Image (cartoon, rainbow, N blue to C red; front, side, top):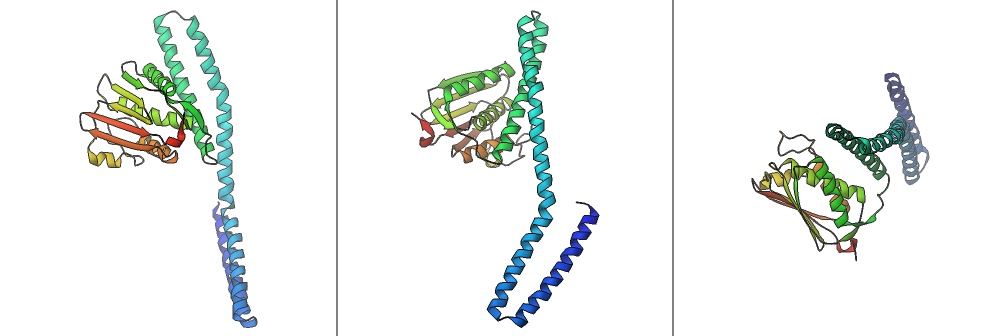
Length: 277
């Protein structure tokens, strides 16, 4: 909104308020008290509603324009990302030299990460307007896929898996974000080589590392947005706040236990009604 527009709105509101006061005084002189109060209340509510609509119209329009731009950009990004992914996959089959294969693998990983960020942004925008659809997820298979992705990104990491079959109804992309944030934190805050144990049994999922660990005071703060226990590590401090938000929305019980210089264990307990027999 320009400076001229603000001045115009201010002058208009002053005039409107002056007219409203004049009409109010007139009502109280001409009509009985109860009728005057009713008429004045209706007048004030009508004027207030119209003024709010008038003042916020540019803001709503700007918000809609930004939303349209984001959606159009996301749509346009689909083509180059799909092209990069398809071509790197084809080239990988043809290359024999080890160095070139490694370079192509890095490009493929980078494009996969861009595709993930694209899906994440699209997911977050849609989630603002309606609840994401729930799907039946074979959690054992889901975890194996995420671990496989992390073994590609971090070949030095050691994963120990103890997984029993469990099918749940959940938001797949939100669950992927949750697992990714927990696993990446376990790797980030563990000494080399990171050793991560993932257990799935009954209605419980446990992800435990043998890393730096945390004291009780830190555990109380880690779900705060932008909080970082270790500022020397890369990151924005939003990962565990995302985990907490997802768990709260899905009614998943979240618990973290940790000991400094020993371990950190993240426990997710799913609701019985979300478990598919």
